[in-house]
Image (cartoon, rainbow, N blue to C red):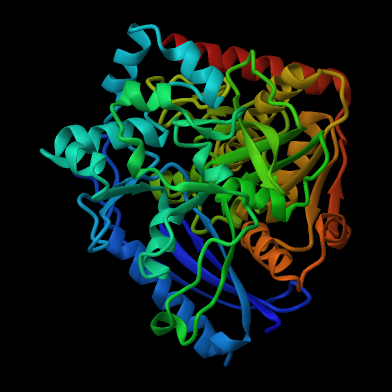
Length: 494
């Protein structure tokens, strides 16, 4: 039993990754699933798709690598956060499609709570902003919209969970209704200081607490899979939301360590240690991980558009055929042109939280072409990261040294990471192991199973692929960032 199976249930696909005793990837399997958009601003998943792709990818990676269930010491799960599922306790069948974290249908519920004066109390308890992003108002919407569901929930007939909870319920044959502290912290119903569900917030949302899962450490006994699913029973021993799992996989265990994941968007977490830091700059206060009953807190900032800006160049403008071309195009840009892209295609995330504003390109000349646009798209990632960097450092203590570790698809671009370092004026560390999210979930399970090292030992295994250091002088860096800030204010003002 020297292998760990990591399940990475994401927004557009599900992956299963096998790790060996040395925490190296043995193999992986991936399946995409359908996205449902019932109305403008609504995003749903069929929970059966989440379940079926999970089981199928697990079976596939085991078969392809000739690993049996009896050779797996434990399962770790990482998942898209905030996505909300309600299901029948007896049948395990969902009563509604999963409402995805991107869904905006509960804007009105959030506005009503804000107008009633509840935002300060909710933010204090949860560390979150009053926004449709989080699970609590999604759950309220389901209970409000399906007649009789709230009464059924109060009677214990219905259960709520984020995706990890739903999968564990199914995997365990309906014997484990659990979640971990990182997923609970994203529901808008969990008091991150007290470490328990908030009676006050559940009452405000009219959510029966009988339907909420038990909250555990990230490394714990979450139950055991039914033997008929993967061959024999396997213990589920690790759970963390995807961004927290990446933070763990990057071994950001010390206060001041920050990870930034560059996918479609960008999510940055800064470890702030044992004390939750209240942001003055509209960052989120959240739980980075919880081990041995002790939470470690983080500041989090979200950028809506990172890799999606490159997808726009490919699919929207047609100036590139594949994403990798941007790294070749950007260095060819005319250094005398200052083309700047504010990619607010779906509004601006942290620290602005301006969902209604839209993107713009500044500084175009008659000679501007694909190279200049490509450079602007890649630089926009650095500028937006600088926004988060400045806000987090100001919240935590402005002059305190911060170590930045990067992962995700865009981190493979040397040009982009060098540009990021130049715009931050700080070193950027890229690890050898790029499967940081799955690795985080795997380490939690493997450590709990006793086959992987403890926290300190795991941190020692982190290996640097390349460090990018600033090559741009202070004056031009600050001038460029000031121009970005003016462009953002122009977009917000439109």
